[in-house]
Length: 205
Image (cartoon, rainbow, N blue to C red; front, side):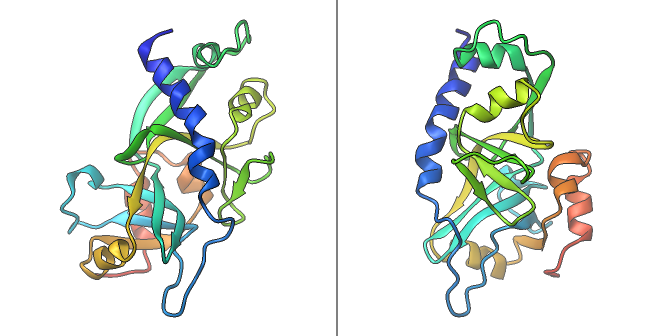
């Protein structure tokens, strides 16, 4: 098995363990509105080069910290048939490629599948009613069979914050926030996502 595909297999296999630790619904405390389901957009004041022009879909944000997935840093395309073969599905008959993304600098060996909400498995986690996340490997098999979600984005790694860390970065103008829009997550030109998301920002410098 090629090293790159073996790494993807290991990453997807590790996904359920991480997502199992996420709460079904983000907790909100007094004075602590959750950004889960919102877009986090790197501002021109962002000093961390890993997040230059990054747009992040926030998955969790509560008193324990925050987790999001970068949606505009492409790693390129992989043959879907080769990916499924690496997962043990030989002779799947799958055609075409699937694009994968760098979801952030933390846990690059952990995979995430963001997708439209009409697709649902037991392991599917609703984010905001417009985008969901599924941790079961079955989602790739369903995509190959034409039974998967209408829209999907596969990412490896994530952006994570300790308690209070994201709030501090927001106070120092490192991020804009904007309403999540499925078109930006799944359909927009990746080279235009930052520009279009910034135009929707609700946190001005």
